[in-house]
Image (cartoon, rainbow, N blue to C red; front, side, top):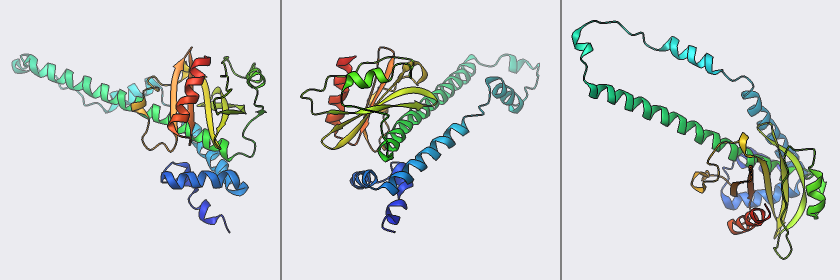
Length: 254
């Protein structure tokens, strides 16, 4: 009964809609309460399963084309001289409008795709914090953690030297983003957990590393960049300065 008030807000917490101050309190509670941790993990897994199921059946390009043709208004033939002498300005206006509409739709789709990636990364981070076994390989030694991923993911990456940096490595685990395998490393700094995700760049949307495109409602600080054909994400409730410092260590190591 003690946790009923916390569990009532779990969905709001997982959606990142809790105020920042309350979010930190919620993070601490979830990390220390086995019941709420298990409940949070179950809800995140259900959310991811629903998202995957929703993408299982995607209309093909040919199907979309047929539907568009079926609902498009039929052209009426006319041999009147007035239609044949329509001003060129009208044609230019129509072409310009169609081009703008197309670019707007494409931009909207790109933005939705980027937001989906950020949301998935945040979900993976929260699910790990809520898990009773956050890592599959437990070690503070990068020379132990890095080889563990060999043969499990289709790429290699380097881990930074952390001496005198204030960061400590807890371990790592395999993870998936839209069914794409990747590496998930977990670091600590001043009692804050930070997740570092590494995926192959080709399977993700472009322009992810532009800070102006990061969702403002994201409940964590995040850095993301592309390097050597790989896409890196550093995310956590630590300060923006700490996130940036760990990101720089990875950039130097790569």
